[in-house]
Image (cartoon, one colour):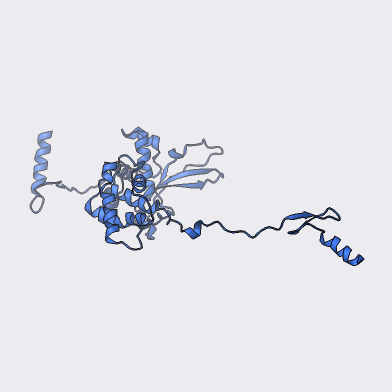
Length: 301
């Protein structure tokens, strides 16, 4: 059987037009006639998803509508554990491929449905939606509650909120040569304190203005290192992205000046006095009589 497979493979390679590449993968592309799924390269080659997330995304996309795609169903299907599969599903949610929606059934009960969108970017741009037939089971008077993760997948794209824009890298008011040199040295030195944060020269050059903004605001280099190296995800896949995110999100405010630190002066409060005529309390800087007693005194006079 192996010999027949090798012969067939050799024959297929000879039919590929042009010279074969000296290294790397060589594709033998045979058109599918049945049981195939079209997967976009935006998913198959996504640079922000793990290999597990890409694989689960392709698997979910290949399933018919109504298939179970919860954590327990996927764990029973694959060798990966629940923690790994749950993390992969969260990745797909973060990038818009997977979305959980709440829907009300005809009997008034609320259920959670899992929605998979094969092109999140096109959905946000208002792309056309191809209807997908969905088998709907008849509603019984009292359905048995089903855990959220075990509801069937419905491959009908719904409204998915776009991700908030990434916060820009902070910039100093004036990036002097001395400030740029100090910021670059601080970033290049991070790997001494966190071996995972190995930045390339291009990364250091790009991130230097962000670190310079911290230094310009009076942040001590030790405080900046602590903010950038504490509680790193393990393993950190993209060190430059982590540093950029923290430089933007954790940027401290400028140090207040002496004028902002001066306590606010309040107007003096007139104290209470006890009237010497009627023992009534009244406000006055000096002891004496209240207004009513003073009026009676002048009338009597």
